[in-house]
Amino acid sequence: MAKKNSGLRFQPSGGTRAPQVPVGKKQKLSIERLANDGRGIAFSEGRTWFVSGALPGEQIEARVQSARSQVVEARSERILQASPERRPEPCEHARTCGGCSLQHMPHSDQLVLKQAALEEQLSRLAQVQPELWAPALTGPEFGYRRRARVAVRWDPKLKKLAVGFRAAASQEIIAISDCPVLVQPLQPILRGLPEALRQLEKPQAIGHVELFNGTTSAVLVRHTAALSEADINRLQQFCVEHDAQLWLQGVSEPEPFIAEQKLGYTLADWGLQLTYRPGDFVQVNEPVNQSMIAQALDWLAPQGNERVLDLFCGLGNFALPLARQAQEVVAVEGVQAMVERATANALENSLNNVHFYHADLSESLAGKSWAKGGFAAVLLDPPRDGAYQVVKNLAALGAKRVVYVSCNPATLARDTEQLVAQGYCLKKAGILDMFPQTAHIEAMALFELTSI
Image (cartoon, rainbow, N blue to C red; front, side, top):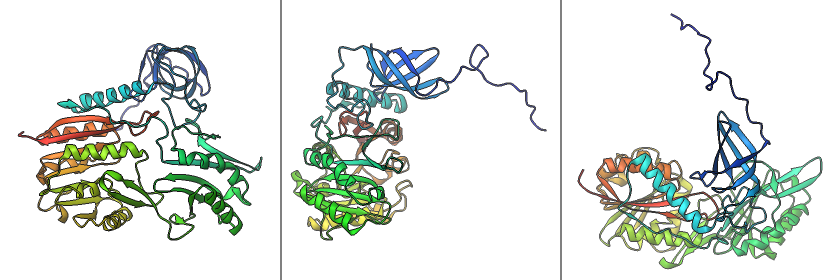
């Protein structure tokens, strides 16, 4: 029998549907507290407002960016009454550029916010807290970022090329001559890039540009149509003037203008150099990356007679330092090209006790040939989706110690619940301040196997 349609619709109390808040509307608000991502929370006319660039206790005027049901997302445009905790943003573009969202907040307060967010996720989702909270791993709050993507868009009507960073919650491109979070070697490249691109015969062929810094600086130009020889020579000359490599990418993979050129970064404490290509995942914060590896190895405590598993290994950022201490390291990655480059990195560093394998890490590890024999310890550094399938049966590998490096506290908490159910105890946890001036949270957790 067909279900009878009563014709009733769910409505807010009062029986009428509240009108939608139009995008662009300005609204005066009182900020009551902060959300986990650093946005201010306000309540007005039965709606919850999430306002970027606002602090608790402030009276502000905000502009609506989006609205759905009873939730409004907005951006602070005018501070009517400032919090005593507010600081002047070091970057003049902080309120418009989409790169940084917390520059108005002292760095110490940013760390407190991120620590509280991690604590809340572990408590609410996993009903657990670590036996010990580790101090935050920090580095310079500015001048740390060694990679950046520069947006480029050609306006056919104005015949003008826009170059810069994307605006917050918008496709607008903000022209930026100086970016305080970029490492110093990339600053002159960023300043000179707009004029260099506008001098091309066919600037409309440029899709975007990426900047890199490691053992050298590099400029990747992504083009949507073939570039003339003259334009390629202009780009190469620009790179020569800035002591940088030129890389080009059309429909295929990025290629260096000079074939023998390589990009790389060093792990000085372990006497290692890793080679990578544009598009590979590389931690953007070199000082914190070095500290992160040191802490992970300290917590995992690999011994010279132990076999260790490194999951989501990438280029070997953890696996190669681990190989300096463990008897054998098995490293697994879901991208075949990264497996090949990690293997090459091991050979170039004369490490023969680390072995790299390709596997789909969204699936269980059961039955994998490289998993036979078990492991004394496991390190995993998954993407934002976490490692749910991997950790579901991690205890079956025999690992007594697990270090989990996370870029998403919510999935870390979810996976923690699985590990605790298998008899692991959360011994330590702490944040890694990989992205100062943003609300992005990285964390590390140590688990030790106990009796269930």
